[in-house]
Structures are given as C-alpha cells and as structure tokens.
Length: 357
Ligand SMILES: C[S@@+](CC[C@H](N)C(=O)[O-])C[C@H]1O[C@@H](n2cnc3c(N)ncnc32)[C@H](O)[C@@H]1O
Image (tube, rainbow, N blue to C red; front, top):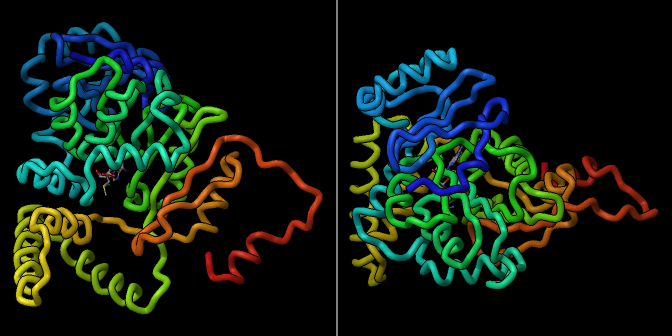
C-alpha cells in the first residue's frame, strides 16, 4: 500500500509536482510531466535519486513504462543492475540480521520520549502534524512517531527504507529513498524536521543543513544531532586514529569493508572480555560500521551551528545532550530573532577568535 503522503513529494531537481501512476498496489512511477522525468515506486517506496531505473523493475513493467514514456515524451533514465550502493546499507542490513530491538543502545520507546523533550512537543501536540525524519536509518523511531498520530515521512539514502516500509504499514507513514543534499520536498513542507546523526555524513554539512532547513514550515521546529569537535586530548587522538582507519576502510570494496568491520568487532570484543568488560557484540558491530565505513564524517561546534540556524531564519537554538562525549543536539523554531539595539560584534571575528571556524 502506498501512503497518501506521496503528494508531498516533488521532483528533487526542479521541485515541480509529480503525478502518481501505479502498476499495482506496490509498484508504480512518479512522473514530472513538465520536466519529462520519471521516478520509480518499488515495494511502496518512491525512489527519488533521479539517475537510474533498476533493471528488474524495468524488465517487469517494460510495456507500461514504454507507454508512459512515449505519451509524456520522457527520456528513459539509465537502466542499472541492483540498487544504489551506500555504506549505510550494510550497517542497517547487519542491524536487521541481528534482530536488534535497540538503536544506539536505546529502546524505541526511550528514543520517542527523547524526541518529545528535544523538540519541546507532547503526545497531544504532534497529532496531525507533518514530521520529516531526515536520514531515518532503520525507521523504528519514524514508525513510532506515526503510531503516535503524526503524518511522518522517513527519508534515507540507504536501502534500509525498503525494510522499514515493509515492517510498518500505516496510511500516515511514508518511507522514501532520497538524498538530503537535494531533498524531494517543496520549501516549508514540514511542521517538525528531525535529523539524528545524519548530515555530518554528507559532503558539506552546512550545505545539507541549508537544504533541509528550507523544508521546515514557518514556526516549525528543526532538531539535529551532530558530532562535536573534540574538546579533550583523549578525543582528539581517538578521532584522528578512527578517522585514519575510516579513510582506509571506506576505500575497500563493500565485501572487504564488511569483513574488516566484523573481524575488528570480534577482536575488540575479545580484548574487552579479557579486561573483564561486558559489551554487547551486536551493538559494537553497528558502532563499528558507523565509525569505519562512512565516506564523510565532519565535526562541529554549537556556535557554528547556531550561526547556520540564524542564517536560515531560525530563532536562538537550544542545546542538548552536551553530556554525550561524541556529539550534541540542537533545536530551533523557524521565526526571526528579535533585533535588539545592543552591540553587534562582528560574528565572524568572534567565531574565529574562539576557534569555532
Ligand atoms: C548514523 S545513521 C542515523 C540514522 C537515524 N537517524 C538514527 O538516529 O538512528 C545516519 C543515516 O544517514 C543516512 N544518510 C547519510 N547521508 C545521507 C544523505 N545524503 N541523504 C539521506 N540520508 C543520508 C544514512 O543512510 C544513515 O541511515
């Protein structure tokens, strides 16, 4: 079943409307009649990555696709074997294979409670609101938000969206495969946007921040969690070492990346056991994928991120999770900050002076 929320989707390149054409309950196409482009819907998941059609999908619906193409003067995209390859697909595949019920060591119920605190919402206040989970990963939190009565879209670049969509079928929930650097939504589409540990994994965090911030409605909330710049010598060294390992590992073919991560996980677990420490093997495996396989990983400072919020028309953000050694959360409302007649120091000077940029 394809959710009604599909009408919220736009062509990622032009932000033009898309028409839905279904071959059956699960598979179909989204058509941009103005720009003459098509995007597949496979197993209920719209794929808005815009550069290819998957081979088996094309073969299965060749006649229908040819008809649509000739009726709308569409240029047939590249036909490719298999889905888009992405390191995070391996991470979520491992998560599913281990049948885990906690994400980052936290139950979905606890993550939901965290969401309410981070975004200053309640069970009552989110009912009927439109929420975007930007980089939704395994989609467990995304589905829980929909079960609590919000209209929720979970977008992710990885193939995790297919499993997430199969697991939770609700009319007010839609999973999309797409790229946050080019989000397939019109500006001001969502009341609340959350992005937990995602956009620092894109080429340029600030660019992606700006792209995602545009999708927040006026008076809407944007919450994100990012890696923090190391504040202690221990973390500076830890980050340098793990980043060097990531630099090497993520250049390997996916099969070797998997093998390296699994071997290192066993090794670390073994060492920890010898030292008398108890550690959940599955949790460690997912953490190792997250540490060693992403192509990009950037670290930020809250002052720097406050400036991004300010530039995108948000009021002063609130800071949370500062006690977490790896990262911090920030949330702000899209509303202009009140201008005061006070002294306005050159903010670039201040940021540079305190080593934030
Ligand atoms: C560390 S995981 C966090 C997942 C989820 N937000 C959570 O809290 O469990 C990062 C996620 O960001 C997704 N991601 C990274 N770059 C992306 C991009 N350009 N567009 C969409 N998703 C992206 C990855 O596929 C991955 O699922």
